[in-house]
Amino acid sequence: MIVSKEQLFVEFNQVDWEYPGPGVRRKVMTYTDELMGVYVEFEKGAVGAIHTHPHLQFTYVRSGEFEVHIGEETKILREGDFYFIPSNVAHGVVAREAGALVDVFTPMREDFVRNLAAK
Image (tube, rainbow, N blue to C red; front, top):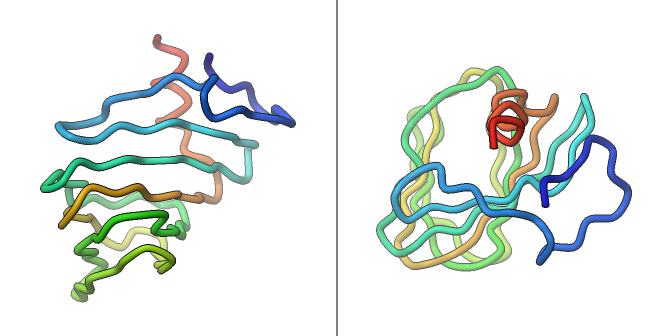
């Protein structure tokens, strides 16, 4: 299943996985024009490559351990930790062990929605 814009209830097991890179899979769980929630799993050693985007982002570390790079700073974060990414600041992660992140973006990531529509 692909989530619809402003869908009120979303069951995790009903949403299709996307595979944006080696050892990484994600589910776009919910979105409006202003906000998006995305669940992302990483295998140990998988990389979320350094990139930028104009969206504000905060991320909850649901499980695992990640080396998180934001701008010129790097920190090791674990289950229960959060991080914030300002607009247009280079960032990325390396999974030091298998784990999952919950990303929240504002506004929503139109590129992610285009990927869903292309399926």
